[in-house]
Amino acid sequence: MDIKPLNAIVYNQEKVNIKDVIAPPYDVITSDYQDELYKKSPYNIVRLILTKGENRYEDAKNFFEKWQEDNILIHTKKPCIFYLIQKYTAPNGKKIERKGFIAKNKTEKFETKKVLPHEFTMGGPKEDRLKLTKACEANFSQIFLVYNDPQKQIENKILPKLQDKKPFIDVVDDGGVQNIVYLIDDEDDIKIFEKTLEDKTVLIADGHHRYETALKYSEISNNPQAQYVMSYFTNADDENLIIFPTHRIITKFIEPYVLLEAVKKYFNLEEFTFNSMNKEKVKEQFLAAIEKSNEKVISMGLYMKNVNKFYLLKLKEGMEELVDAPDVLKKLDLAVLQDLIITKELGYTKEEQMAQKGIKYIKQEFEAFDMIDSGKAEASFIMAYPKMKDIIEISSQGYRMPQKSTYFYPKLLSGIAINPLK
Image 1: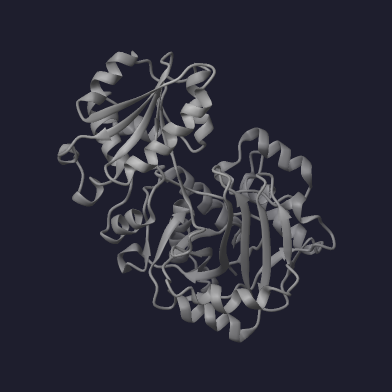
Image 2: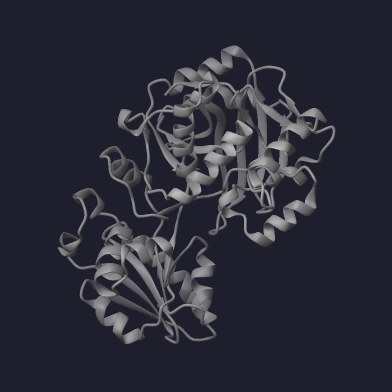
């Protein structure tokens, strides 16, 4: 993988409060949250990544140019790499420090096997991002890439040098995640990053649409800078890289007993009965049981409306052979669920699943339960935490996981750095 430091554009922190101008990636910003970000600052990066109005791309270009003229956005003094430490508390109470860095990498077609996708993409978002890239000639957000380095060369060689260094940015975002950013512009240090990655294959963890957009843009632009895209890199061998599941929620009406009968064809069931007094305690036991069981056999949870039970589903022996998928995908819980239950038993078409008609993909665990409790859904399939080794194995064999399979948390902030493409 060919990586280089960024000739970056950054916010001038003498003129803006960085907390007021950062934002999460455009695809997780709701309409209400977009309004909040607009109110935070006239210079919030949401005006670049997700502009309001009819002339969105032209408006973003005008904002981008004006902010540079007014020195709201400025260039770093030297090409640099941004080392990022994200501190947060996991749902189980564990303190996590995910480490990685932001640089730019040469865009590679998937056929080269240097960059591996793991999910499918849709045309609409790619068309939108391409129009924005053409108008502004810049990357405003990072692709999220994962590499393997058991020796942890960057962590061991770079981290000690940062102990007494003042961060370029130290900000707690709206999700409660502390983002600590260090600028690294020493040429010898930069060579450590370049050398470590030069023989690596990387996996796209998040930002598939943006990466394919960058590929397309590199083909139509004559500018050498456009052959590179801004990315965030993190080490898959770091125990602080945690992947959260995306749960499947059935919103189309179905009788609980009908769903149970369908599920029993393929799964052995274990019941967790609860009442109003002990529900939360039983839920904790239920969630722990899903993870423990999934280590031995494909397992997931089921929670249905008006049923005071949680169900642990354990795939019966040999049932994975009924899954209409390549062998490497038959070991994946989501592939089993989507083919055997959602497609074959419940009759959802691939188009309905892609468009989320009668089915929703929910990242937040609490929301998967709340939608049942509030009567907004009929059933929630609670998925186990995905395993990085499975994702890498599937991708390396040239296959992709079902859409919305993984949730890499925390999301990367837009506004830390901008990569100009001209």
